[in-house]
Length: 595
Figure 1: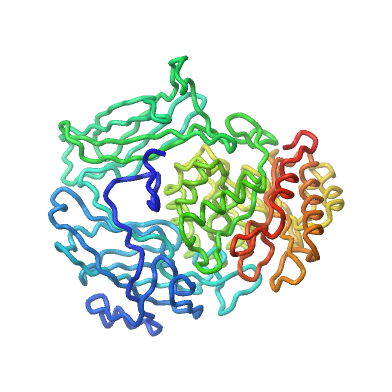
Figure 2: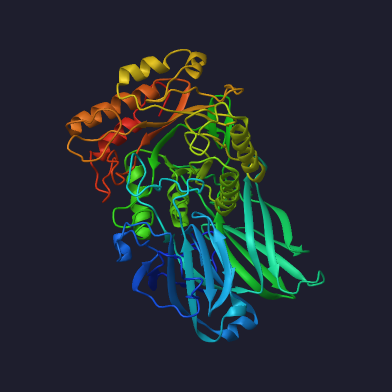
């Protein structure tokens, strides 16, 4: 894409002047939580250094200490040109920091943010001086089960499928000069049937009085060829317009509409230019795709065509860096190996991945289910924390065409009595409808795999290891299946009390999890002795799913091993554990009308 910059942390909102603040920072543990009382933000004394954005638990941080510490501090110097602040603001961005982050600049408080998975920013223009400035960050974390934490453990040691905790800064920190009159947000909605793109803009302008002559120009191109250029007057801090995307020159290579699909992920470049009296105030580069996702009876449709989903469960852990990808190349490697094995998408499980991953999924055509990290105790606090952060995440990643499904809840985690308790049912319903309010165009699964309330796709988790039994179970009449207890080692119903199946598409969104004998960790079912045994079992259970005519997709567990869970198709170093071409052949093999 025209606007792409390697390592740029926000590929769909690109400006030219930015500074990557990753690297070596001073670091200090605060086990007794004395730092604020002793005003460390005014006279910080680091005990060691840390390599940001890797958390202190990881090898790549250079600390590699897995002991839980609920309060930690960071410090580094940043250089700011004060003269630039005559017409710009200096904004500090955190792509992800877990859990509550507090920031001071030159001893002055800049702000705080709660939540480990959504990005956040602080305008620190009024706190900086020309030249070197001191940036101090405190991060507070906890083992509170009310806190949205995903797969992070809440006891001292790993257990079951819960892994090392992630404390502190774990995604890129960066600084940016932002014009005082600037775009702060753009929401891009492709409307395929109408051949147009719906655009909503939020604009920040210091001292805006309503009489300023602000104009917003939008330029859309495809592979360098101009598609459209429109201009509109901006009145107030919010604007909305609709742009025709249909290219009408019959001899033009871009004629018509270029649709995004996994096999041909067509993308358009788009540039936003904000001007005042002919002078450019701000310019932002981005991209979008024309594609539509919806459900229709038993099918999920992509651009009006039934989409059979061959997904992999993807937890996004690396051996030396845990939740943080070692670099951008590691993200690309995962995507390419997933595609090499014949899968067309991932269910990004209990994690909001680095946005560069979503960029490369957009570019390479990998479907993504975006799933919220769960809390594990239901309470008023848990409801408030989860809802706020989930809506931040949906807004943050809305524009990525690769995301085709939102999944706010998984297996009743955090809503453990949703089957019978109306308050927990209301919570899942509320989050479903809030998500649909902001994004009515994507399917939403309110409780993936277990005890559904409202949902656009009915999903099941079943780790049956015998292909014949799998086929027999799902060959029953669909109405019987939906009433039966079909979950792996789980005594529960398909729907919460008061809810029932309403003809939605059906997907087996977890199955498999095969592990090898000799692996120290665990998988699902009996372990296999050889690669041939692995491929035979993968073939039997995958083919059984594909032979059920009313099932329109599956999600195999999982991409890679994760610490004590050793049931990946890749190990944690991203080496193939089985022949990828054998997996690809099974995935792409025609079974009836399924491919």
